Image: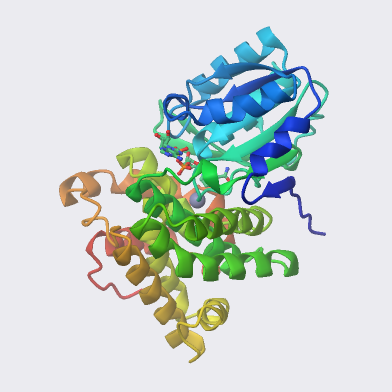
Length: 387
Ligand SMILES: NC(=O)c1ccc[n+]([C@@H]2O[C@H](COP(=O)([O-])OP(=O)(O)OC[C@H]3O[C@@H](n4cnc5c(N)ncnc54)[C@H](O)[C@@H]3O)[C@@H](O)[C@H]2O)c1
Ligand SMILES: [Zn+2]
């Protein structure tokens, strides 16, 4: 038995207008200070004002939100008793909003206990709206929540199908001001979702089309969005692609590149999308010899190779590296600016945490601990390693 969950998705130009008709009393916008400074919170507030909804703002979410931040936000929610929680921003505020919502409904729950088996009984106090301002994580459409344990420098993959948003507002105007580097990093995150959602072992007939279409859109439009941020066609296509990829991988799974990227991000603070996309081609090469079919199908669909089998899978890896380079992003750990000495000093932790990450269980070729270690070393500078 499989499940497919999705919010109601309002998308395209002027999607924010949907909020004018929202019914409710009080909203808590969960966001970060940059969103306030850029005027994006005001853009949303105008519509909630039109709907006669009282607006409160919690703007303290940091990139890669911590459990402590979520607890602070939940306390504010308990004080003001909103009937809407609005996650506004990139993946960080949206994930924080999901967790704040759960703690608001269940003040006694430990964030680490938010898992797919729990019976949360949400929507007794509030419902959730997500409004992405990056075109990347797909968090607006997924039920996954990534929180960081700052003491253990570890990212925790949490979430439960119940905590998928009720409404996602996917309006390209909210992401059109992203600077070049953020556009590249987050767009490559969406690509990694599309590729891993299609090629992990939990793919389904319902997620395949979403992942394929997202991958094709991203190869076509990401270079344009990075080159010229005012290209609104490219912005809109990327915003839609990120949500498609979110629905795709969110109802399937991500895979090894995410497991490896999470640990790199937690230890070396490499932005999420940059980290996962960097690892993606190495993980494809690791699988290519034994399980190339799904990679080959994807390669064929996006028009990078119709040779089938291992050759096509390897060609997909090359194609992804070329896209990373085209948008100015690193294709190895060395290029990401991490010193070999510092990297090797953390290698045991990186391998341990990736080996224990939930995303690794869906890898088409399951790595042994030693193979994973070799893969981390391979990704340092691309010096070939015999798997
Ligand atoms: N829940 C999921 O399904 C899921 C999937 C992938 C990643 N994630 C998580 O999402 C987080 C990363 O999210 P992200 O990559 O969207 O970045 P982010 O939310 O961490 O934001 C990064 C920076 O970009 C700024 N920013 C956001 N939108 C902007 C805009 N329009 N203009 C200018 N600046 C803007 C933010 O203020 C912040 O400083 C990580 O914690 C990652 O683990 C979650
Ligand atoms: Zn991701």
